[in-house]
Image (cartoon, rainbow, N blue to C red; front, side, top):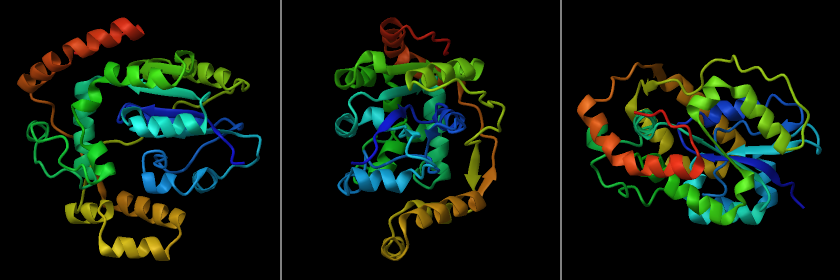
Length: 289
């Protein structure tokens, strides 16, 4: 029987989830994955390969006694994927990190541009385009749901229908930045692990960048005939490693412009009721504007 994942970070994208995963992996009793995301519960083809294959693919643990901790930042928005996760382990701990939905949307847009998924030249143009325009590509579709993925309260209600609320840990990005050690203590305690002196002074992950070559970014992220051939010829882990290496080479540092003030005010109105519901229902200390 395959080992079960004990804790999964399920959202929200561009909200500090990678930083939290990298903090947790320092604990000697925790085993994480080198890949940015576990896509197996969202990707139907990958899930069909079976739990044993999924666990052995993503996790390379030092001992069988290590606790498995994973991240799939878009999972909280996918009902079917949440159902698969529940089937895998209905008692697992879930973590949701939330960020100002306007900043999250803009960061997601910049990431999509960086990876060649987004063709719109401006954020204001991108959010006006149909959010389902890439419905035939689950990864690209999820990465370009800029405004929809900021409706946190709506999606958290669905998560609560499948998992006990006592197993769902919700924090804001501000809370993670202000007191990461407190969050790490809560999570290690929830896993019945000993306290650990985590180092939370590491460099920032997923800093803003833009591709040196847009065509290369699109090629890496696309589904060309060449890539399908490599899927047959090369092992999965080697393909992932090669893709990450090319991404690093193709990225260059970038300081994005600020969001247009008028657009920000429009989006503040758009999220106003959703944020009120989030704050009221989940007691989230919201300071977003």
